Image (cartoon, rainbow, N blue to C red; front, top):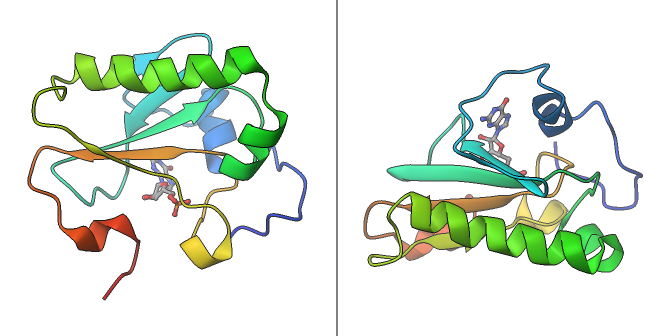
Length: 129
Ligand code: 5GP
């Protein structure tokens, strides 16, 4: 079900449960601002989700309400993760689905990192024909 961006943050969402360690994941990167773990349903050879530790529904909410430290920390965490995964030379794609038209399903801001192969333009948008 697509995320309704008009709703407040729901602490029962699956990524909030992962942050509280109620659901276990393979942690690929963690610092005070971000947590990264493999997507349960990978769409590329490497498919990692990066989430902020703060309670933000979407990219829109994060950009509007997070502190400068949180925004900078999150951006730096993505770069550190990419370096740690050895992706700086060949590259990677970042996607953040925001709201119903983009098909956002989990109402906790997250960035998809796709890599490890030549990526199809189809992966720019979920469910693209
Ligand atoms: P969205 O559609 O909101 O941009 O992306 C949500 C992503 O979360 C999907 O790619 C989906 O596979 C992933 N996902 C949903 N539930 C879980 C889970 O419990 N564990 C992990 N690792 N990924 C999940």
